Length: 84
Image 1 (cartoon, rainbow, N blue to C red):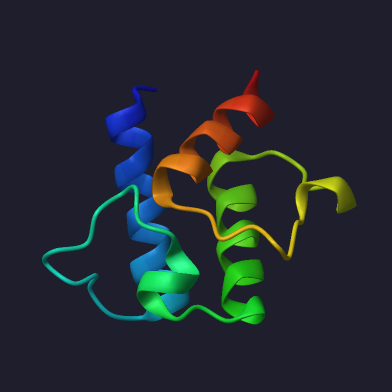
Image 2 (image 1 turned 90 degrees about the vertical axis):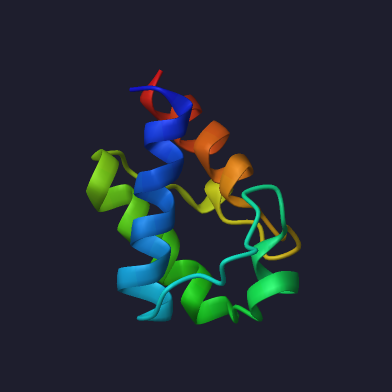
């Protein structure tokens, strides 16, 4: 799957399962999610679980870093790593 297509999947999960609304028109895939959207830790966990289900991989405790404020691009690289 191309990075662009994977980024669209990540954005869809973010919109449908976490935010339950559309992303702002000016949203950039490189922008940190917590900073730009105000995600809390529960929403971040919901996003990771959504990615886990969508792309069929398993999360480990090491995958969860509460200090990280990931962007969509960061999550795409993360998923690519889990799938390789």
